[in-house]
Image (cartoon, rainbow, N blue to C red):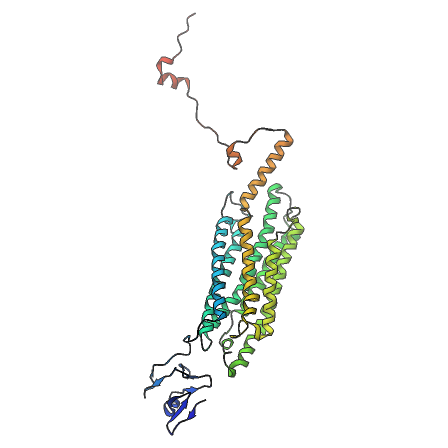
Length: 407
Protein backbone atom coordinates (compact mmCIF):
# COMPACT_ATOMS: atom_id res chain seq x y z
CA UNK A 1 0.00 0.00 0.00
CA UNK A 2 1.01 3.64 -0.46
CA UNK A 3 2.65 5.53 2.40
CA UNK A 4 2.34 9.29 3.15
CA UNK A 5 5.07 11.44 1.68
CA UNK A 6 3.90 14.89 2.82
CA UNK A 7 0.62 16.64 3.54
CA UNK A 8 -0.60 16.43 -0.08
CA UNK A 9 1.19 13.46 -1.62
CA UNK A 10 1.65 9.72 -1.09
CA UNK A 11 4.40 7.47 -2.41
CA UNK A 12 4.58 3.90 -3.63
CA UNK A 13 7.76 2.20 -4.88
CA UNK A 14 9.41 5.56 -5.53
CA UNK A 15 6.41 7.08 -7.35
CA UNK A 16 4.53 10.10 -5.94
CA UNK A 17 0.84 10.88 -6.34
CA UNK A 18 -1.47 13.70 -5.26
CA UNK A 19 -3.65 12.11 -2.59
CA UNK A 20 -6.49 14.60 -3.05
CA UNK A 21 -6.59 13.92 -6.80
CA UNK A 22 -6.62 10.16 -6.24
CA UNK A 23 -9.54 10.42 -3.82
CA UNK A 24 -11.45 12.73 -6.15
CA UNK A 25 -11.38 10.17 -8.98
CA UNK A 26 -11.68 7.08 -6.72
CA UNK A 27 -8.20 5.72 -7.45
CA UNK A 28 -6.68 3.18 -5.08
CA UNK A 29 -3.10 1.90 -4.94
CA UNK A 30 -2.96 -1.85 -4.30
CA UNK A 31 -0.14 -3.95 -2.93
CA UNK A 32 0.44 -5.70 -6.26
CA UNK A 33 1.65 -2.44 -7.81
CA UNK A 34 -1.53 -1.35 -9.56
CA UNK A 35 -3.48 1.88 -9.34
CA UNK A 36 -7.09 1.60 -10.41
CA UNK A 37 -10.69 2.71 -10.08
CA UNK A 38 -13.86 1.25 -11.59
CA UNK A 39 -12.78 2.32 -15.09
CA UNK A 40 -8.99 2.43 -15.42
CA UNK A 41 -6.06 0.37 -14.15
CA UNK A 42 -2.36 1.37 -14.36
CA UNK A 43 0.95 -0.20 -13.34
CA UNK A 44 2.88 1.87 -10.77
CA UNK A 45 5.95 -0.17 -9.86
CA UNK A 46 9.54 -0.30 -11.07
CA UNK A 47 9.79 1.67 -14.35
CA UNK A 48 6.02 1.96 -14.77
CA UNK A 49 4.35 5.18 -13.69
CA UNK A 50 1.39 7.39 -14.50
CA UNK A 51 0.77 11.13 -14.18
CA UNK A 52 -2.59 12.82 -13.68
CA UNK A 53 -3.71 16.26 -14.75
CA UNK A 54 -6.01 18.26 -12.46
CA UNK A 55 -9.01 17.15 -14.54
CA UNK A 56 -8.17 13.46 -13.98
CA UNK A 57 -6.64 12.79 -17.40
CA UNK A 58 -3.86 10.20 -17.25
CA UNK A 59 -0.55 10.70 -19.06
CA UNK A 60 2.12 8.11 -19.91
CA UNK A 61 0.29 5.34 -18.06
CA UNK A 62 0.77 1.62 -18.72
CA UNK A 63 -2.48 -0.34 -18.63
CA UNK A 64 -2.68 -3.40 -16.40
CA UNK A 65 -3.69 -5.49 -19.41
CA UNK A 66 -0.48 -4.74 -21.36
CA UNK A 67 1.87 -7.77 -21.61
CA UNK A 68 5.19 -6.91 -19.99
CA UNK A 69 6.88 -10.30 -19.45
CA UNK A 70 8.61 -12.71 -21.82
CA UNK A 71 7.06 -15.92 -23.09
CA UNK A 72 7.67 -18.78 -20.67
CA UNK A 73 7.05 -22.54 -20.72
CA UNK A 74 3.26 -22.34 -20.76
CA UNK A 75 3.25 -20.02 -23.75
CA UNK A 76 5.92 -21.99 -25.60
CA UNK A 77 4.06 -25.28 -25.21
CA UNK A 78 0.87 -23.50 -26.16
CA UNK A 79 2.44 -22.46 -29.47
CA UNK A 80 3.59 -26.05 -30.07
CA UNK A 81 0.16 -27.55 -29.41
CA UNK A 82 -1.50 -24.80 -31.43
CA UNK A 83 0.66 -25.82 -34.39
CA UNK A 84 -0.18 -29.51 -33.81
CA UNK A 85 -3.89 -28.78 -33.83
CA UNK A 86 -3.48 -26.68 -36.98
CA UNK A 87 -1.83 -29.65 -38.74
CA UNK A 88 -4.63 -31.93 -37.53
CA UNK A 89 -7.18 -29.52 -39.01
CA UNK A 90 -5.52 -29.84 -42.42
CA UNK A 91 -5.40 -33.63 -42.19
CA UNK A 92 -9.03 -33.77 -41.04
CA UNK A 93 -10.02 -31.70 -44.06
CA UNK A 94 -8.43 -34.25 -46.39
CA UNK A 95 -10.27 -37.06 -44.59
CA UNK A 96 -13.53 -35.15 -44.92
CA UNK A 97 -12.99 -34.80 -48.67
CA UNK A 98 -12.17 -38.51 -48.95
CA UNK A 99 -14.97 -39.99 -46.88
CA UNK A 100 -17.57 -37.36 -47.75
CA UNK A 101 -17.37 -38.10 -51.48
CA UNK A 102 -20.33 -39.94 -53.04
CA UNK A 103 -19.70 -42.87 -55.41
CA UNK A 104 -23.13 -44.53 -55.36
CA UNK A 105 -26.70 -43.29 -55.81
CA UNK A 106 -27.99 -41.55 -52.69
CA UNK A 107 -30.09 -43.52 -50.21
CA UNK A 108 -32.61 -42.05 -47.78
CA UNK A 109 -31.51 -44.45 -45.05
CA UNK A 110 -27.76 -43.77 -45.36
CA UNK A 111 -27.07 -40.15 -46.20
CA UNK A 112 -23.54 -38.87 -46.92
CA UNK A 113 -23.76 -36.31 -44.09
CA UNK A 114 -23.74 -39.22 -41.63
CA UNK A 115 -20.13 -40.07 -42.46
CA UNK A 116 -19.13 -36.40 -42.59
CA UNK A 117 -20.19 -35.50 -39.04
CA UNK A 118 -17.11 -37.03 -37.35
CA UNK A 119 -14.89 -34.75 -39.40
CA UNK A 120 -17.10 -31.70 -38.86
CA UNK A 121 -16.76 -32.12 -35.10
CA UNK A 122 -13.05 -32.86 -35.46
CA UNK A 123 -12.60 -29.54 -37.27
CA UNK A 124 -14.42 -27.76 -34.44
CA UNK A 125 -12.20 -29.45 -31.84
CA UNK A 126 -9.04 -28.69 -33.81
CA UNK A 127 -9.99 -25.03 -34.16
CA UNK A 128 -10.65 -24.71 -30.42
CA UNK A 129 -7.36 -26.43 -29.59
CA UNK A 130 -5.42 -24.17 -31.95
CA UNK A 131 -6.93 -20.98 -30.50
CA UNK A 132 -6.53 -22.15 -26.90
CA UNK A 133 -2.88 -23.00 -27.43
CA UNK A 134 -2.00 -19.75 -29.14
CA UNK A 135 -3.74 -17.59 -26.52
CA UNK A 136 -1.54 -19.16 -23.83
CA UNK A 137 1.25 -16.84 -24.99
CA UNK A 138 -0.29 -13.85 -23.21
CA UNK A 139 -0.85 -15.79 -19.98
CA UNK A 140 2.92 -15.77 -19.52
CA UNK A 141 3.30 -12.18 -20.66
CA UNK A 142 0.43 -10.53 -18.73
CA UNK A 143 1.11 -9.06 -15.30
CA UNK A 144 -2.52 -9.37 -14.27
CA UNK A 145 -4.55 -12.19 -15.76
CA UNK A 146 -7.68 -11.35 -17.66
CA UNK A 147 -8.79 -11.94 -21.23
CA UNK A 148 -5.96 -14.32 -22.16
CA UNK A 149 -6.63 -16.72 -19.28
CA UNK A 150 -10.37 -16.61 -19.90
CA UNK A 151 -10.06 -17.26 -23.65
CA UNK A 152 -7.61 -20.12 -23.21
CA UNK A 153 -9.89 -21.88 -20.77
CA UNK A 154 -13.09 -21.25 -22.72
CA UNK A 155 -11.69 -22.98 -25.79
CA UNK A 156 -9.93 -25.55 -23.60
CA UNK A 157 -13.24 -26.61 -22.07
CA UNK A 158 -14.98 -26.65 -25.48
CA UNK A 159 -12.32 -29.14 -26.63
CA UNK A 160 -13.73 -32.01 -24.56
CA UNK A 161 -17.41 -31.98 -25.67
CA UNK A 162 -16.37 -31.35 -29.29
CA UNK A 163 -13.99 -34.33 -29.29
CA UNK A 164 -16.57 -36.47 -27.50
CA UNK A 165 -19.05 -35.61 -30.25
CA UNK A 166 -16.50 -36.47 -32.93
CA UNK A 167 -15.75 -39.88 -31.39
CA UNK A 168 -19.47 -40.47 -30.88
CA UNK A 169 -20.21 -39.80 -34.54
CA UNK A 170 -17.30 -42.02 -35.57
CA UNK A 171 -18.64 -44.86 -33.40
CA UNK A 172 -22.24 -44.38 -34.49
CA UNK A 173 -21.21 -44.30 -38.14
CA UNK A 174 -19.29 -47.54 -37.73
CA UNK A 175 -22.51 -49.18 -36.57
CA UNK A 176 -24.38 -47.55 -39.44
CA UNK A 177 -21.84 -48.93 -41.92
CA UNK A 178 -22.24 -52.43 -40.46
CA UNK A 179 -26.01 -52.10 -40.87
CA UNK A 180 -25.60 -50.85 -44.43
CA UNK A 181 -23.38 -53.78 -45.39
CA UNK A 182 -25.91 -56.28 -44.04
CA UNK A 183 -28.89 -54.56 -45.67
CA UNK A 184 -27.07 -54.34 -48.98
CA UNK A 185 -26.75 -58.11 -48.87
CA UNK A 186 -30.28 -58.76 -47.55
CA UNK A 187 -32.75 -55.80 -47.54
CA UNK A 188 -35.21 -57.75 -45.33
CA UNK A 189 -32.70 -58.70 -42.65
CA UNK A 190 -34.03 -56.43 -39.87
CA UNK A 191 -37.64 -55.89 -38.73
CA UNK A 192 -38.99 -52.36 -38.95
CA UNK A 193 -39.71 -52.05 -35.23
CA UNK A 194 -37.86 -53.56 -32.32
CA UNK A 195 -35.25 -52.98 -29.60
CA UNK A 196 -32.62 -52.15 -32.20
CA UNK A 197 -34.66 -49.25 -33.59
CA UNK A 198 -35.35 -47.90 -30.11
CA UNK A 199 -31.66 -48.05 -29.21
CA UNK A 200 -30.68 -46.30 -32.46
CA UNK A 201 -33.25 -43.58 -31.72
CA UNK A 202 -32.64 -42.91 -28.03
CA UNK A 203 -28.86 -43.31 -27.74
CA UNK A 204 -28.05 -40.18 -29.82
CA UNK A 205 -30.55 -38.15 -27.78
CA UNK A 206 -29.02 -39.31 -24.50
CA UNK A 207 -25.47 -38.66 -25.68
CA UNK A 208 -26.12 -35.16 -26.97
CA UNK A 209 -28.06 -34.32 -23.81
CA UNK A 210 -25.05 -35.06 -21.62
CA UNK A 211 -22.66 -33.62 -24.19
CA UNK A 212 -24.57 -30.34 -24.22
CA UNK A 213 -24.71 -30.28 -20.43
CA UNK A 214 -20.92 -30.71 -20.38
CA UNK A 215 -20.61 -27.66 -22.63
CA UNK A 216 -23.32 -25.64 -20.87
CA UNK A 217 -22.03 -26.12 -17.33
CA UNK A 218 -18.33 -25.54 -18.05
CA UNK A 219 -18.39 -22.89 -20.79
CA UNK A 220 -21.63 -20.88 -20.62
CA UNK A 221 -20.89 -19.26 -17.27
CA UNK A 222 -19.35 -16.11 -15.79
CA UNK A 223 -15.56 -16.13 -16.06
CA UNK A 224 -14.64 -12.87 -14.30
CA UNK A 225 -13.83 -14.34 -10.89
CA UNK A 226 -12.02 -17.31 -12.42
CA UNK A 227 -9.28 -15.00 -13.73
CA UNK A 228 -8.72 -13.24 -10.37
CA UNK A 229 -6.17 -15.71 -9.00
CA UNK A 230 -3.07 -13.63 -9.75
CA UNK A 231 -2.46 -12.14 -6.31
CA UNK A 232 -3.43 -13.00 -2.74
CA UNK A 233 -6.58 -10.90 -2.05
CA UNK A 234 -8.44 -12.59 -4.92
CA UNK A 235 -7.05 -16.13 -4.67
CA UNK A 236 -9.79 -17.49 -2.42
CA UNK A 237 -12.51 -16.13 -4.70
CA UNK A 238 -10.76 -17.55 -7.77
CA UNK A 239 -10.42 -20.98 -6.14
CA UNK A 240 -14.10 -20.99 -5.18
CA UNK A 241 -15.16 -20.03 -8.72
CA UNK A 242 -12.83 -22.57 -10.36
CA UNK A 243 -14.00 -25.50 -8.23
CA UNK A 244 -17.69 -24.71 -7.97
CA UNK A 245 -20.56 -27.10 -8.59
CA UNK A 246 -20.80 -26.29 -12.29
CA UNK A 247 -17.28 -27.51 -13.07
CA UNK A 248 -17.80 -30.61 -10.93
CA UNK A 249 -21.12 -31.46 -12.58
CA UNK A 250 -19.66 -30.81 -16.04
CA UNK A 251 -16.88 -33.35 -15.51
CA UNK A 252 -19.41 -35.97 -14.36
CA UNK A 253 -21.62 -35.27 -17.39
CA UNK A 254 -18.62 -35.82 -19.67
CA UNK A 255 -18.00 -39.22 -18.10
CA UNK A 256 -21.64 -40.22 -18.59
CA UNK A 257 -21.45 -39.17 -22.26
CA UNK A 258 -18.30 -41.30 -22.57
CA UNK A 259 -20.23 -44.29 -21.19
CA UNK A 260 -23.05 -43.71 -23.69
CA UNK A 261 -20.53 -44.07 -26.52
CA UNK A 262 -19.67 -47.53 -25.23
CA UNK A 263 -23.39 -48.26 -25.16
CA UNK A 264 -23.51 -47.50 -28.88
CA UNK A 265 -20.56 -49.83 -29.48
CA UNK A 266 -22.23 -52.72 -27.63
CA UNK A 267 -25.49 -52.12 -29.51
CA UNK A 268 -23.70 -52.37 -32.86
CA UNK A 269 -21.81 -55.49 -31.78
CA UNK A 270 -25.04 -57.15 -30.66
CA UNK A 271 -27.26 -56.45 -33.66
CA UNK A 272 -24.87 -56.27 -36.63
CA UNK A 273 -23.11 -59.62 -36.48
CA UNK A 274 -21.02 -60.95 -38.18
CA UNK A 275 -19.82 -57.62 -39.65
CA UNK A 276 -19.48 -56.02 -36.21
CA UNK A 277 -17.60 -58.96 -34.69
CA UNK A 278 -14.33 -57.01 -34.70
CA UNK A 279 -14.50 -53.48 -33.28
CA UNK A 280 -12.04 -51.16 -35.10
CA UNK A 281 -9.01 -50.33 -32.98
CA UNK A 282 -9.60 -46.63 -33.54
CA UNK A 283 -12.59 -46.75 -31.16
CA UNK A 284 -10.93 -48.19 -27.99
CA UNK A 285 -7.76 -46.15 -28.59
CA UNK A 286 -9.67 -42.87 -28.94
CA UNK A 287 -11.87 -43.72 -25.97
CA UNK A 288 -8.80 -44.40 -23.80
CA UNK A 289 -7.35 -40.99 -24.58
CA UNK A 290 -10.70 -39.34 -23.86
CA UNK A 291 -10.91 -41.13 -20.52
CA UNK A 292 -7.54 -39.66 -19.51
CA UNK A 293 -8.80 -36.17 -20.24
CA UNK A 294 -12.10 -36.78 -18.41
CA UNK A 295 -10.30 -38.08 -15.31
CA UNK A 296 -8.06 -35.00 -15.38
CA UNK A 297 -11.14 -32.76 -15.65
CA UNK A 298 -12.65 -34.47 -12.62
CA UNK A 299 -9.44 -33.95 -10.67
CA UNK A 300 -9.22 -30.28 -11.68
CA UNK A 301 -12.81 -29.68 -10.57
CA UNK A 302 -11.75 -30.57 -7.00
CA UNK A 303 -8.07 -29.52 -6.99
CA UNK A 304 -7.40 -25.96 -8.16
CA UNK A 305 -3.59 -26.17 -8.08
CA UNK A 306 -3.23 -28.64 -10.99
CA UNK A 307 -5.71 -27.09 -13.42
CA UNK A 308 -5.38 -24.63 -16.30
CA UNK A 309 -7.54 -22.11 -14.43
CA UNK A 310 -4.59 -21.41 -12.14
CA UNK A 311 -2.14 -19.05 -13.92
CA UNK A 312 0.90 -20.61 -12.22
CA UNK A 313 -0.20 -24.26 -12.41
CA UNK A 314 2.44 -26.86 -13.41
CA UNK A 315 2.45 -26.96 -17.20
CA UNK A 316 3.16 -30.71 -17.19
CA UNK A 317 -0.34 -31.40 -15.87
CA UNK A 318 -2.02 -28.97 -18.25
CA UNK A 319 -0.45 -30.19 -21.48
CA UNK A 320 0.25 -33.86 -20.70
CA UNK A 321 -3.21 -34.57 -19.26
CA UNK A 322 -5.29 -31.81 -20.82
CA UNK A 323 -4.16 -31.15 -24.39
CA UNK A 324 -2.14 -34.25 -25.32
CA UNK A 325 -4.99 -36.80 -24.90
CA UNK A 326 -7.27 -34.75 -27.16
CA UNK A 327 -4.54 -34.36 -29.79
CA UNK A 328 -3.80 -38.10 -29.69
CA UNK A 329 -7.48 -39.00 -30.02
CA UNK A 330 -7.75 -36.71 -33.04
CA UNK A 331 -4.54 -38.17 -34.50
CA UNK A 332 -5.97 -41.68 -34.12
CA UNK A 333 -9.07 -40.72 -36.06
CA UNK A 334 -7.01 -39.07 -38.79
CA UNK A 335 -4.71 -42.09 -39.20
CA UNK A 336 -7.62 -44.49 -39.57
CA UNK A 337 -9.41 -42.01 -41.79
CA UNK A 338 -6.51 -42.02 -44.21
CA UNK A 339 -6.18 -45.82 -44.14
CA UNK A 340 -9.83 -46.82 -44.45
CA UNK A 341 -11.59 -46.69 -47.84
CA UNK A 342 -14.62 -44.60 -48.67
CA UNK A 343 -17.87 -46.32 -47.62
CA UNK A 344 -19.31 -46.32 -51.13
CA UNK A 345 -16.15 -47.87 -52.56
CA UNK A 346 -16.23 -50.54 -49.87
CA UNK A 347 -19.87 -51.35 -50.69
CA UNK A 348 -19.01 -51.61 -54.40
CA UNK A 349 -16.15 -53.99 -53.63
CA UNK A 350 -18.43 -56.20 -51.54
CA UNK A 351 -21.01 -56.27 -54.30
CA UNK A 352 -18.36 -57.29 -56.80
CA UNK A 353 -17.18 -60.08 -54.50
CA UNK A 354 -20.73 -61.40 -54.15
CA UNK A 355 -21.17 -61.32 -57.92
CA UNK A 356 -17.96 -63.29 -58.41
CA UNK A 357 -19.03 -65.84 -55.80
CA UNK A 358 -22.42 -66.24 -57.49
CA UNK A 359 -20.83 -66.62 -60.91
CA UNK A 360 -18.46 -69.24 -59.53
CA UNK A 361 -21.32 -71.23 -58.01
CA UNK A 362 -23.23 -71.13 -61.29
CA UNK A 363 -20.15 -71.90 -63.36
CA UNK A 364 -20.38 -68.64 -65.32
CA UNK A 365 -17.28 -67.08 -66.91
CA UNK A 366 -14.89 -69.42 -65.12
CA UNK A 367 -11.39 -68.74 -66.30
CA UNK A 368 -12.55 -65.72 -68.31
CA UNK A 369 -11.04 -62.36 -67.53
CA UNK A 370 -13.49 -59.58 -66.69
CA UNK A 371 -13.68 -56.59 -69.02
CA UNK A 372 -11.69 -53.57 -67.93
CA UNK A 373 -14.76 -51.45 -67.23
CA UNK A 374 -16.18 -54.17 -64.97
CA UNK A 375 -12.90 -54.34 -63.03
CA UNK A 376 -13.22 -50.61 -62.42
CA UNK A 377 -16.79 -51.01 -61.22
CA UNK A 378 -18.30 -49.26 -64.25
CA UNK A 379 -21.36 -50.43 -66.17
CA UNK A 380 -20.57 -52.40 -69.36
CA UNK A 381 -20.22 -50.35 -72.50
CA UNK A 382 -23.05 -51.02 -74.92
CA UNK A 383 -23.25 -50.03 -78.56
CA UNK A 384 -26.43 -48.24 -79.55
CA UNK A 385 -25.53 -47.65 -83.25
CA UNK A 386 -28.24 -48.73 -85.71
CA UNK A 387 -27.53 -50.92 -88.70
CA UNK A 388 -28.29 -49.12 -92.00
CA UNK A 389 -31.45 -50.30 -93.72
CA UNK A 390 -31.43 -51.64 -97.29
CA UNK A 391 -33.23 -48.53 -98.55
CA UNK A 392 -30.67 -46.22 -96.97
CA UNK A 393 -27.84 -48.28 -98.44
CA UNK A 394 -29.28 -48.08 -101.98
CA UNK A 395 -29.82 -44.33 -101.60
CA UNK A 396 -26.25 -43.66 -100.51
CA UNK A 397 -24.69 -46.10 -103.04
CA UNK A 398 -26.91 -46.76 -106.09
CA UNK A 399 -24.35 -49.12 -107.62
CA UNK A 400 -24.68 -51.46 -104.69
CA UNK A 401 -28.26 -52.32 -105.60
CA UNK A 402 -28.93 -55.99 -106.33
CA UNK A 403 -29.32 -56.93 -110.05
CA UNK A 404 -32.84 -57.64 -111.26
CA UNK A 405 -33.98 -61.21 -111.06
CA UNK A 406 -33.88 -63.02 -114.39
CA UNK A 407 -35.89 -66.25 -114.54
